[in-house]
Image: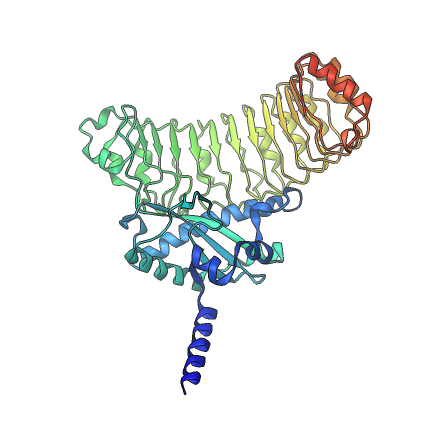
Length: 479
């Protein structure tokens, strides 16, 4: 009878373990999956080859940010504001996800934590009350969360991590130049003199009404909170020049842009945008626009028609497959960031941006660059690494050229004509011949050449060593 009872206990514990999905990191590594098995069974996205899975990493980044936001909102729905808990902890959460996009395990705490002199260097434990709240939220999170989009792309089990902030960052010291907490804003006795509010990372789930005390506000940073509703009254600030809502999943159905002539710098990254708001064109004085890390995929043809004062445009990781021809209207643009998209070609209209100084097009799927960009006489910095490029138009005034991780088999002759070139990276291509004429570029300071056939292998040719010595004797860094 006793043996039957013990067998029942073993079977019962086994069933409970099978159904359990939420673990602290130490228990998970001890009972379920040691670190080596984790890495073998579930792909760690941070170790994926950037050549093959580059944009999946960026999709992962968007998903992780969204999950952290969802976790907070689920807590509010359960009557638990994790920002009000009595521990100030940045708690890492790792999801172990199967091929179907279902979450097998949710693990909180640092995995593979380091120990020095038998002392734990990272502390991430929760007290009993907060652990209870955390489990309540985590269980509902598991029930309503699926990662099917990314799972379909990867076709394998994988890990996805994000960080939850419990409690508030209360260790902000008062500054003479700006206000950084709600309590400082409420206690301020001279609001008319304050020009900057830095209310980022305060776990705010509502727009702080105290902001409207400061009539002469010029800079408002509300980034990385949980604000959904942005009141129309925000446009009542007649001197507001900088606004950041980055990291808040804003309700763009209710938030409308109004005509103004003062806003010059706007950051809407990680806000859930899926298209450029039509009302944004009313902000005709905009000079800096950051709308990267959203999920656009496509643009409307007239999206960039009304931003003639724009100087810097960030479209980093918006999953764009093409740019509209209206990009030509950005006649004062000096900086364009298109990192981590899915572009296979650039529009010829890009050649009309005569003031462009920096073009960042790395981590795309580009096969070539349009000949029209040869007319960009002010272009000084071109970041085009991690593409499929095998030819180069003449860009006479380049100071920095990064063509690493492309498909060049022959060293582009145009580079030898770049008399202003200071830094060149053409590493990890398929170039066989040593680019000897680089020694004629008098302003060259750095040359990154590794990973090409002419300098691969354990034995490097005498000719290559001689070439490197000539450059190094001129104080050129060669790698």
